[in-house]
Image 1: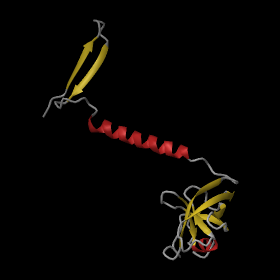
Image 2: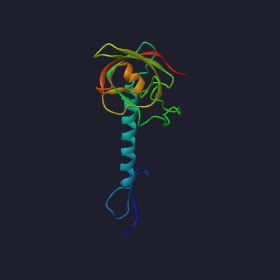
Image 3: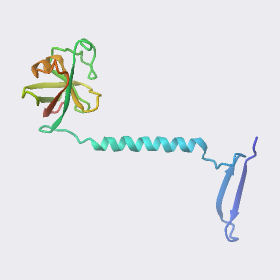
Length: 160
């Protein structure tokens, strides 16, 4: 077991303390693992804040382009992130950031078909996809066979 020692050195004979070192026989200063843990936590926090700053708030008229997918039978009857029961035959969708109750218009860029949906869930969580549509909305866009299509999304109104 090491002994703790503290050394205090006076500056130029003034009696002021200029430095304290604390070692416990390990040859390291008192930071140890705890200091590294705090550093890692701070680094993660900075990254999260930077990522949040990259998303601008989307309001009426804003447009996003990307990929759309759809979900149906597997989720039918289950709770959505908004607390509503998912109905695959309703014109609803999942978006990562838009408020629940927001209304958006989705244009299938392959065939020009349009659908208006209400946001009631969170997702999609696949890179490049910006919206997950209900089966009914996907059917209106004629994207069932393709599964994923390029779309343009325009926000019509933002939920409460």
